[in-house]
Length: 451
Image (cartoon, rainbow, N blue to C red; front, side):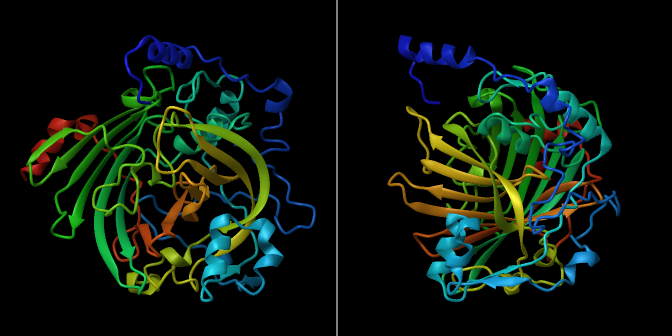
């Protein structure tokens, strides 16, 4: 938040620091976790017409070393129906504004909708910690959850900000190495490929000495990335320490530029500054659909709704699908995605007075079973739909976690789109990776740059 050091500015800071805590859930509400609600807060039951099934969690299986997403029980299914421009009106109430824009704009765009499956599960220690958090965890400022440990912070949310914290600190393993390939796809389908290797340690949702979220001491991840290709970007490195808190308290970041040959503090690794090497097609706070501080927005909990979202999208992340098959003119190859009907939490973020961002409004749709935002509609300062983000959600039973493979950002003003988190032609995520703490220090990154 850009506040001048004036009496008014100091008063605003004090107001933020002393903001009252959101009320904890009642004992009666918390008692429903593991009963009518799943241990992380979703409704166990399906819907009335059985188009959304009951939650049937999958057991842990597979290798943490790295596996491509696959589920033979569902991957061979046929679509129930296909949505196109011709029948858009029939399904309009269950579609995001982004999907409606794509369907109404392009005759070639369609959505194949399959039977819904709710197999997302998490480790038992995450369940236990989440249930405990329901009675202790509070949000004392929009970026300051307190008395939270290891599990989802707010399984029975009372605000949009609480929902976003569930997403930010969700369980993703103790650490990971990810081969993150990215494409900027032009209107004619030609694309520019960037390859990035990402490494991360998790410190909150972890089995290794978990760090509780408390004011001034809420470290929850350390992140390092190195760009491998193309040659003009190779060697660029980004280092991030992410904590609870706003501004620089919440995120410390460094950037190594091969041209300068040194690492430097980088407060611009935040918010709507373009991520290095994306040519402006992805902002820093669009990684993992949304990340970083919440302070620039007021986060409204709109409610829960049945929506058609990308889900169980194993095929699109398969090594059998090459990058050139993914890219099509104007939009993703829509033969590949899988869409299902699910309940989502709808959160609306509106720009807070006195702050700024390219997006003055964001509307996020988060899967109730995983707290992952499968879709985001982004609006400009004139109220127009500027971008649409789509996370092709997959569940990894080996680590029992959820992510988007790939994530897509459609730019409606230019007709281009951006693909990220692709591993099809490299290696799948390695969840056995864990790094020493000093691996994520600026001095260590500087030394690695010399090798």
